[in-house]
Length: 302
Image (cartoon, rainbow, N blue to C red):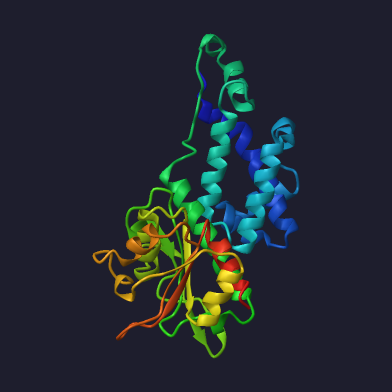
């Protein structure tokens, strides 16, 4: 009796790690850095590099394996993909390769002939797991944040209260389902300052605006707040975005439903804005499918 996990460990894992280690080394990472990212010893990385680890040619040649190695290697090297996400993505691929008539399933059946008569799929991991979904969201916000840092002149768009870039999970209900930058994105002497890596549940105002808009029917998963000006609103409208104004009292709480009311009265919504009030700074919120798209909307104003 041989478990599917044994097939994964003995045949898939050495091949995948060897390919990924080689990819990371080609991207200029040191042996120590590769070892840290893969969670293995430097001696293991050295063995991968010198071909001292037996790999499987069929698995190595699979397009899905090669695509994941390239995508994961690029993400780990740039910091846009976390180790958790890399692990989950690899596990999802294992799940795919472990379904009926695929590589690992066939290897498993070969090791257990009785399974050939079994009419069903063998799956190892859940592709729609909460961990995978949340890691995808965090990765998207990281990409957006990197774009903000590289966008010359974005600091001029940051409101006095600071900005935040957020993205939510598909079934988001509360701010705990929304990832953003802890604290605020600030203008520090003309430079965009990102205080920390994105986390879930760290944005109150921008996350609430996004959740209220979604609750009223807006099909957006991300939002970015920028400084208000009449010219900014006009430029967004001229660019073809649907612009909607709401009462500022609704910005900090869902109890007043100002955002929801404004959204329900509109045919479409890509941008929300309020012109300020007593103790309330005027703000513009751009809404998009994901965090990088929200940043691209803001970039179009520069």
